Image (tube, rainbow, N blue to C red; front, side, top):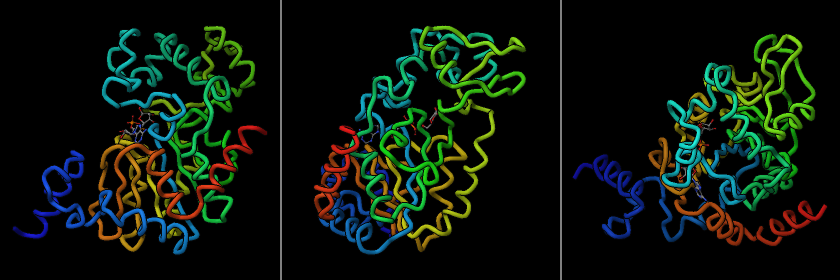
Length: 304
Ligand code: APR
């Protein structure tokens, strides 16, 4: 069987997470998929071989904090939005739909407002630890829950590509509004109105809206990075997902996710850890000798 067929077959097997049952060693699949020595290889790369790490994160990083992701079957947000009778799940982040019917987003925002109910988890603190060890070049996140900021990752290292609740604007005239006043209105279950009578929403990037200008820094960061780590994302949404293919072939890429996504695992320097993100990060930190620092960082920040 030609090598490329083995890789494609192994890619499919790894995606299904059943490579063990079929017995084909995932190591024939160039991206190591939870192979016995993958934790050792990955920990050596992170601890000893890099100092400019770019991290890409999605909703799977926040599920251990109790926030549902979007697309997981049965538990994902898009599965749970049926009560809003949306024409399609993503309508909740569609500007036109928000104008016609703001309440589904308002209800979701009440759930997601940072610092209200949810706290960062060990996955967030792992990225913070990369910063503390002088290794974090930048973290690009799709998440709007603000948990990266709450974990203490500094603003200049954090790109909230799909926006955040930390600022708010009128969708008609663009006027900036006091985010605390907008938060108070939304937590009261109401729509915040601008003096021009337009609706005011937190600066979450809705489908069709421009991503923040600093997102495009990724074109430089992708070249400067000596390691890419992808955490908890389906890589379904572009242009965010394109970052992972923007890094050159010489740059190792590590995916930590429930299943294999995107092009991860198909390059020679790819490594893949499938399964629960916290379990894998725990094992990785243990292998790196960083687990005590990681737990101390989380404890200090959560008790601050
Ligand atoms: N451990 C490991 N992986 C997990 C865990 C977990 N505990 N929980 C979820 N995942 C994985 C899921 O299997 C999935 O592959 O994280 C990924 C989450 O994917 P999505 O739900 O699609 O979320 P995300 O990739 O962030 O979505 C991107 O879509 O709707 C838009 O704007 C929205 O920013 C969002 C974007």
